[in-house]
Image 1: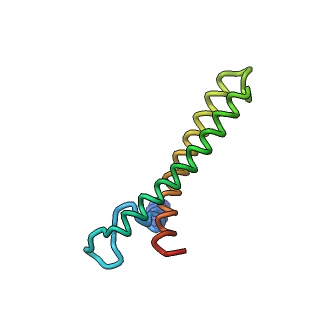
Image 2: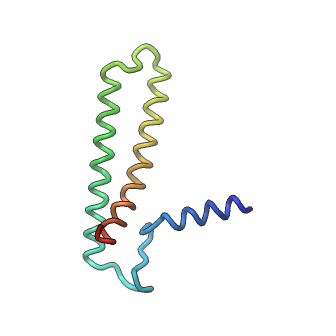
Length: 101
């Protein structure tokens, strides 16, 4: 019970703008927030596609050409990592844009 509660609290603290909660309660999303969200998502997607291109380029060079199973495992791990990174970075960049850092 303690472990699941602490993981839940951890997730809630770092899910900054998953659902919009304004600086004051019950406020609507403004144009600046929507623009910052689009910029953050675009920057995260660009980073993800760059990493995906590097992974595919490494596979094209024959990194695991002798063993197809290792190739599939590497691609699965890489794509999963990139997907998780894009999700994290979009929230992180939105946080940075909103704080003005």
